[in-house]
Amino acid sequence: MATLMIQGTTSDAGKSTVVAALCRALARRGVSVAPFKPQNMALNSAVTEDGGEIGRSTALQAQACYLASHSDMNPVLLKPETDRGAQVILRGKVHGHMDALDYHAYKRTAKESVMAAWQALENRFDVIIAEGAGSPAEINLREGDIANMGFAEAADCPVILVGDIDRGGVFAQLVGTLALLSESEQARTKGFIINRFRGDIALLKPGLEWLEERTGKPVFGTLPYLQGLVLDAEDSIGLTHAEKASQTLNVIVPALPRISNHTDFDPLRLHPQVSLTFVGPGQPIPAADVVILPGSKSTASDLAWLKQQGWDNAIQRHLRYGGKVLGICGGFQMLGEWVDDPDGLEGKPVKVAGLGLLPLTTRMVAGKQLRNVRGVTVAEGVTVTGYEIHNGVSEGQALNAPLFDIEGRPEGAVSEDGQIIGTYLHGLFDHPEACQALLKQLGLVNGEQSDYQAHRERELDRLADMLEAHIDIEAVIALIDAGASPSQ
Ligand SMILES: NC(=O)CC[C@H](N)C(=O)O
Image (cartoon, rainbow, N blue to C red; front, top):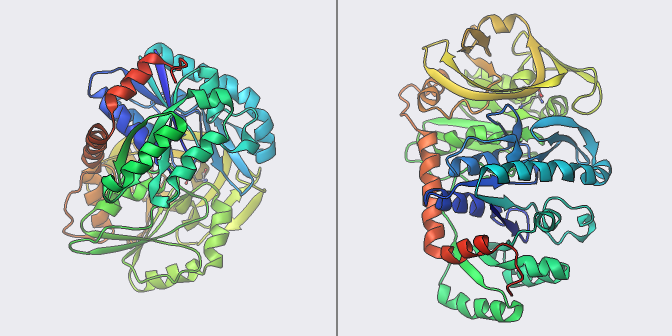
């Protein structure tokens, strides 16, 4: 039983990717390994096999280990609902809503859950690859920390620090981060990984030697910038998309302030016949074949945002021109007549008018619905898989014409003219046949099959290959075996 923690000098330094790569590299060598992220802040979540909710990036790392995901792999998940408050998920279950100050105080209690979850994993697996959050040098958040060094110290595990050279200033990132750590934290930091390097490594060499000399710690390797990597993102939306050979179906998605599970769209980003564009605030809304309203952590406030941006009128115009609209989860709720949140589960108590495109109303009720599902499309009987994460319960006539049949339970809605479609299912494009069938319903008549699951598996292997080629993995394994002993 041994734990290694990967921390980063900044958010988005590539920790999740390094952890996924390391997990796959070790798992395919036959090591019994599991991922662990003590605390994550993200609106992309997954339903675990034990019926809990964790960050998607951790669920992907579980897949990298050939494991089903488990709530213990990410015991604290913070899902921001406003700029200052978040829903706190503890070991897979909703604990409540807290603002930043309350949470800071609550961390001491949360730490017990974090350590209990880690213990449970340690009992099941030989190696745990833990992932930090943000940077360990956030000195204002250091007290009672559970996300980075607070966990590493409690678990007494070694740490590797990842710096992102693509942002520039990587030596300052690494040396500066180290300088801000306490002596014991510095000692447990056993070396570095430089991420996202492009160019001639010969030019970087003198810098790496300087870094090793200056800190007395090794650089385990320098990872290249990976082009076109599409894997479940932790939170931020990568707005670029590769050029497509033939652009057939133009899909636009408003980048809602509280968009949740935008990973639903990854299969579309990769699909050779789909051009997917996220439209941000203030951007003109381009002409499109399909508008998809994504999931939202705060349906009512995102709906207000949508109206402020003029999307309600744009969608009406889009429909008049024969376009189609798909709403997923929060987006589905927005398509109805009312969204009612009497207890303020997602902010303040409100009742707001929806877009009025489907005869249904939604009420937010306590007790989150969390489930992985499997069913068929009503139109063609094609297999679909997905998962549900929502408080809302919808009612109304629209539900009499469902989109899916989930083992006898009608799910979603299709308008009479087929222009407006809604569903609570996330991950609905993941299954290749479902993706093809749904794109057909959205207007792509001769759609090819695009297998996103197979893509994910290939990408994980590609990541592990890349890691093996550029990192001294034997040294990393030796570090895992040695633990946090004061070797340097
Ligand atoms: N995942 C979602 O889009 C959730 C929708 C909404 N916030 C609810 O909880 O019902």
